[in-house]
Length: 175
Ligand SMILES: [Zn+2]
Ligand SMILES: [Zn+2]
Image (cartoon, rainbow, N blue to C red):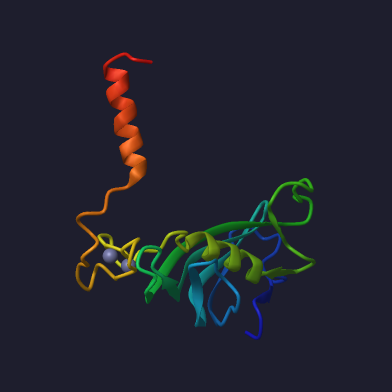
């Protein structure tokens, strides 16, 4: 498959008929600040099924994502697997203009926008290299996963000082 356009002429308007297809394709530019799809793109197994309302696409898509840890900023790779279940509205079942629904275009469906949307949603906004990543020291920038730094212990954030002062005054009912 050169792109992710696909003719559904054989099954359109014949509810119950389906085809199973395999997709494998690079999808450059899918991602956000800290997570993007790797250059291999996606691969997946999809069922393209004719339903009363149009064409239903279901199945599994997976790919390798390149992420940057939101805490320690190290780059890492992680597999992303997602399930898709999307309706492409057929002739006579077009949604109103403002609705965010995919459409059968003539006798074709274009899977690419759907796959792009689904993968983007599956990517984490704040990826972590591991759940307990300790991140970087806010003062000296040491990666605290590699070891501790000297400024760690005796650092006292002045904002907390103001808060505890406020709390003390509240407790003493000075306000
Ligand atoms: Zn990390
Ligand atoms: Zn430090």
